[in-house]
Length: 94
Image 1 (cartoon, rainbow, N blue to C red):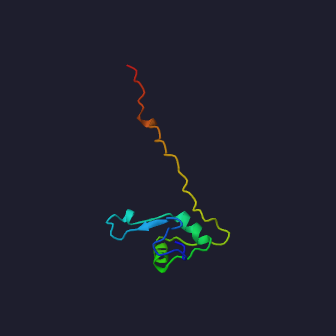
Image 2: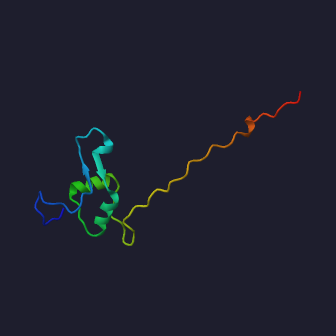
Image 3: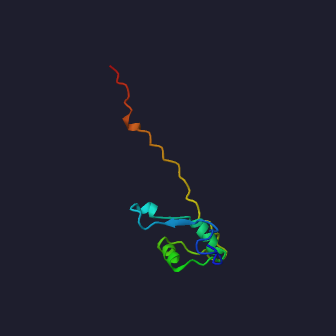
């Protein structure tokens, strides 16, 4: 929210939401960490309550010179099962 906007005014950007009444922990707090780090890097000041949530989820302001985007996890291809060479049976001569 822009500090100059009215209390129920239009927000600049939705960065997530917090629903303490939700029983599902995954949907209780939903945060867009990349965008939060961007706004912190350009000078946004979180309120005390929001700062507590950010600390809980270990979202910090990027250091000077550090890019605000978090590194994407590298997807590793699934390992193919090793061929079972010991299971092959040679034909027996009769």
